[in-house]
Image 1: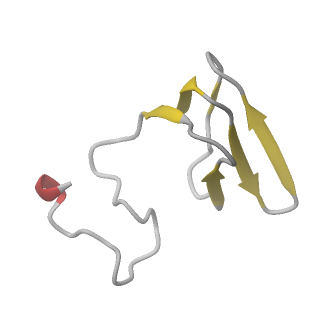
Image 2: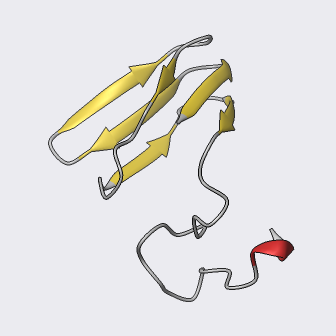
Length: 70
């Protein structure tokens, strides 16, 4: 779940883009490819399970294996 604190966030999905304004939130279903982005400064609060890797289901050179380091 992404909660927008200030600014405006775009959540890009395959085939569509959702705009999330301050005070609004969006829930991304498990396994859904998504890309949060913004054209301006945007502050968000992210809620996710503790076991979620920083790269989701994808494992690559950006993946943090030790979650205590994030």
